[in-house]
Image (cartoon, rainbow over all chains, first blue to last red):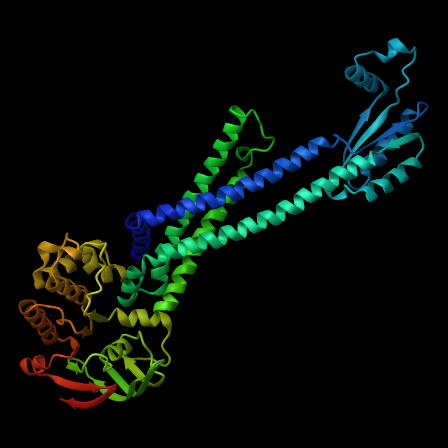
Length: 291
Length: 219
């Protein structure tokens, strides 16, 4: 118990005694996590923008005018249960007319006596079933069902957008991985310098009979505090950046960090573990060197 | 208490210690006498388990260097007080914190730490310096602080590596007087020195080291 109080006290005293190296390390963790956080948000927002470019739905099944209510219900049940279908929306002939009206500003019933627009189902697939091949198979199966007139799938646009999204995803994943690796390397190096400056303390307490655990624990705590502060500052800076973009640049990002506590938590956990483990590794290395 | 058995220690630059065989009993005062580089400090380092022999064994307070576990080294060191030529004080802590450190490492309560530190500071006449920092003290006072830190844990053994080498006559006399006083209260003392006058002034068992070998061991 008393040793725990020693660990906590030494951890805090360590911060006070090496204020400058500590602050430099917090700054470096802040910058590193800022880059990581902005990277994650940039990727998410890019994918979101691309997703918006894509239609709200993947394909549309148009029904024959003579399709009966029973056929429509049967069709709805088949589509709903089809593996990979994420969302299905039924548009009646009246809905289609209203959409036409909204889009072209003219009432189709005033042009023609009868509503020629067909009723339809709009289908959206789950992310992992969103491939052209899978959708083409689906179309083939749908075309064989009674009541179906035509299935419209803008394959070229779909493929292009999917391709771009895949490319963005791959490039950004690789880039983020490199950024994270650089972050780990730079932070670890910086923490090593911070620990090197504490050589005198480590060597002295070692000679006075401190166990390895008792030497490492205060530094581990110090590293945790350092990482927490660095990560928190980076989150605050990202929130500030989002605010500045909205107010001064008039860009309201669809995905903001403030709405994603899991990203905030992830950054803080990453910062805390990166710093505390980085410090621990540096101390362990020094102990191997001095012992 | 301390036993060296056929101890050899090789550095990359060549053999440092060869065929050391000796025993130091409880309550003994032993001088390790020799020139700089003769191997005195290496012997002290082997006693506080900072160096390990390439062959042979060193037994300290019942623990053998050949099969001691890393965590047990810390326990052994908590029973050994050490005083170095260059003091090894923490420059960013006041004198109180420097002396208190080994007690805090043992997990003692704050009031116990306070009373033990005060007692040692009184014994060494450095109570008025407790709130100062090492750089504000003379070399003699710094060595007294180092002695207080070494003795505050009431160790079984005191290792002193040229403790008066950098001190003026008065400070050296004070430090020596205190070390002998410690010895009289039952602490074993191993005192490394190159100062021949000291051996005549305060005679005790003297092991003369030349080029890593004990060439004379006079009780």
